[in-house]
Amino acid sequence: MKRASLLVLIMGLLLFVLGGLEAQEVNQEAYDNLITHYAARNNFTAGTISRGDIEKILTAGLRAPSASNRQPWHFTVVQNRDLSGRIVPNMPEGNILIVISASGDGKTNAREILDCGLATENIYLAAQSLGYGSRIYTGPMDTINNRFKTELGLPSGHSAVALVRVGRVEKIDATSAASSRKNLNDMVTYK
Ligand SMILES: Cc1cc2nc3c(=O)[nH]c(=O)nc-3n(C[C@H](O)[C@H](O)[C@H](O)COP(=O)(O)O)c2cc1C
Image 1 (cartoon, rainbow, N blue to C red):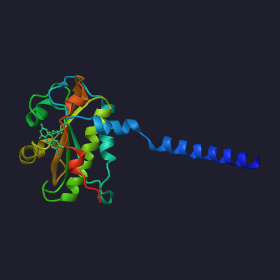
Image 2: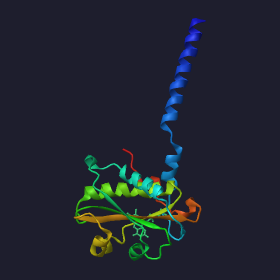
Image 3: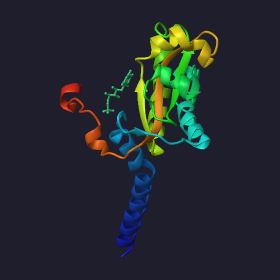
Image 4: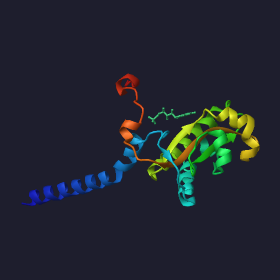
């Protein structure tokens, strides 16, 4: 009888501990956001983005990890349509550009570029978690760094590394909207 009670007690404790672990470790929504994002393009629509949402998106950028926690980035939010339209043409009213910059010429400092890449990804994903569309661009970096640094007011000595376009979107099926990815078995080696 004593032995049976002990067994029940141990099983109860085990269930309690395992149940607790599951609650702590599984964040399905966060994982789904990593798997279901896609780079919006033709489905961007007009419509405003509130200042509160812009700040939430930027806060996610700010929370990115960086080497030695140096946080080398600066974020420039371009809401002026005349200026943004000269960097990425044909943007609907209300779409914004967030330019991620760091000190250097934008090419040589691999560590800062990686840090900025992580902030860029956080911004890109945060925008989509809040229901907006987003797309990362590096194509316009030469144009920005050669012609628009002053007009954008980039911090002295900074060069743009990437930008994220954020805007309202017409809802489309995220699974079919995303481009296909390579096969996991072809891209991974276990040793
Ligand atoms: C570093 C980086 C640079 C990119 N630059 C551009 C760009 O200059 N122009 C553009 O249209 N898309 C650009 N993209 C978007 C990619 O083409 C897009 O994320 C990729 O094709 C995957 O598409 P999907 O998310 O819809 O599956 C860039 C993406 C990344 C990550």
